[in-house]
Length: 163
Image 1 (tube, rainbow, N blue to C red):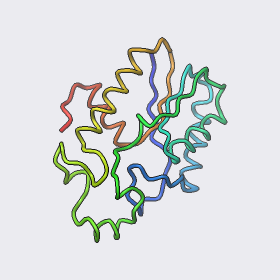
Image 2: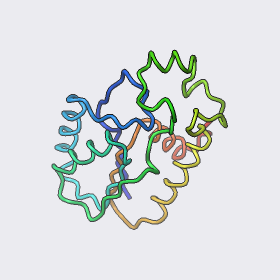
Image 3: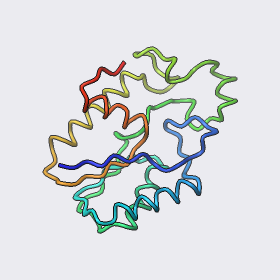
């Protein structure tokens, strides 16, 4: 099995991402188009994508260049961490309302306000990753997701503790 991991194209970096529903910037659309062209010779058996707008847009642009895969799965299981009330909030406003609250400042079991903890995020991605790799008889799979998700997958692949 070959699994291709793709982070969505460039989005608005002036806001807190997470479960933000903002779409791609023009540069992100261009990046997705170029990647789609590079991947055009691969006949993917399945595509898994986060269902957040920026990942869906990336997936659809890539798809426009591909031989259609047999199956496409849009899922909330591949979303970035649920950052609750901070999702899509401008950085300045987030710092004003939640001073010093960043992913790296959370304790492993500490949740974002109305969101999830790094531990819950890790468990969600770990469970879905195991489902993808154990329940598939596919040869080539494309996963379009987010940087944090890919980071967890790399930890899983390399048997490195995620803390």
